[in-house]
Every structure is written in structure tokens, then in C-alpha cells.
Length: 316
Image 1 (cartoon, helix red, strand yellow):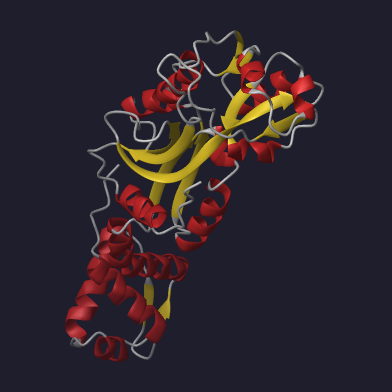
Image 2 (cartoon, one colour):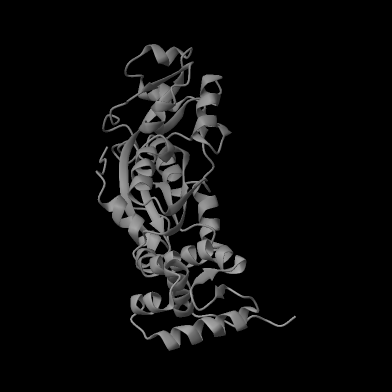
């Protein structure tokens, strides 16, 4: 089968002008050309397509069935072509494209929902794909090129290595207790009693820096944490606390989970002079950062980073 030759947009503009004017003279004037080249161009187009587009007599020009069928398609083609420069500029500026954003569960409470709503309003032509994943899973996805950016949890000043980062929130940890636990009746539970309780915590591989900060709280008090159970998701940790498996240190934002059977207590920093180092460290603080590969060339990533940079940062 003979392949149809490439037809330039100029020729389709000439076809459409004639289809709308149905007069070679008026169509030529509209195109700012003389009539003979237009007549020749239409004849060459029909020869290339192997069909008759216009029925011509000395008195009139009319669309043939093939020409009439092409008119709406050509209008669409030319409109799309006209939009191409603007689309190219929009894509280069990050206003069009795709952004695959990973996020830890705590970011799902705040600030992510409000940001997603605002960003989709601001950049409606960006396909924002959300992927809930723990920090270790996000790091693997970055390595495989499956994520463009991510919201990850870590201890202050210790973002995941090898990635660019922008701090977005800082919040203290709070103590999660079963509502039936004896310590739940106290607004300020005794520190010694708290540190003696079995602990529900995430595996170290999930957030190494924050895991170490929690353990440091115990070690500085000459205590060894009694890990009753490890769990990956914060919701699971809270469910295990509700079941009385142990207590947990969780980011303050987890309080929005509002799990029945769980209470939260905000503890002051431990009293000084109780550990072998002459004191105990301040309570761990959780930091959430937007992270992205240092070599990222996707304009949508740059645009999203600037969007986040312009948001109100919660300093805890």
C-alpha cells in the first residue's frame, strides 16, 4: 500500500480557507496569496490523497463528500497546532506534565491534603500522582526512577542522604497510651514509669534518625527500651497501643487519627540530673522534608518545590 506523503499545515490552512469561502478568489485573498498557487496547491493535495475534495464548475465551488468529512478534523488539527507553542512553554515552566509524589502517612494528616487541593487548582494540567510509602520504600523508588519527589520524616537536620531537601514541618513527639492504661489517668505521667513500659515503634530502617532519637531518650536515662512490637504504619502503631501492647512515641500530627481507646500526653522534657551524662536529652522532634533527586531535570519538580517553598511552614 502506497504511503500518503506528509502534508504541511500550510496546505491544510489553504484547504480550510477554500472550504469555508467556497471561492478561490476570496480564499486566496484571505490567505494573502494569488489564486493560481492556491488552485495548484488544492490540486496537489487531492492528488496526494487520491480523492476529490471539491467539486468545481465555472459558476461554483462545492465541497465533495471527502472534503466535507475533513473540515472538522482539519479545524481540530489547526487549533491543536496553534496551541503547541503555549503548551511547550507551559511544559518548560512546569505547568504541564506529571509529578509522582511519595509521602509518609503522617504527611497525610497535614499539610498534604491542603497542598494537593491548592496545587491542583494552581496547576490543573499537572497530573499529580500520590504514592503513600514509608521512607525506606521511597528511597528505593527514587533509585528506580519511580518517584519525582517525596515527603519524608526524619530527625531535625538529618534528612535522607543523597537527596535535596526542603523542611516543611517540625513537630514534637507525644506519648500514645491505651485509654485503659493506669498512666492514662495522669496528665503528666511519671517519667520513670513511662520508660519502663513496653514500647511499640517502627523498624529502624523506616526512619533511622528518628528511631535513634527515641532510643537515645532511654539510653540517656540508663534504660534499655523494651520493644514489644514493631509496626510500619503509624495507624498500625496506634491500633497496637489501643490493644494494650505497649506505649508509643508518635509525631503530634498523629493525634488527628482520633483512634478510640487511645489517649495522648504531651510530656515536658525530663528533669535534669537523672542520667549517666548528668541529664537527659530533650524529647525527640520530628521533621518532615520535601525531598527530590539532586539531578532532577523535570520542570514540574522545580515548580512544585517553589510552590511548597511559598507555603506557610509549621515550626511546631
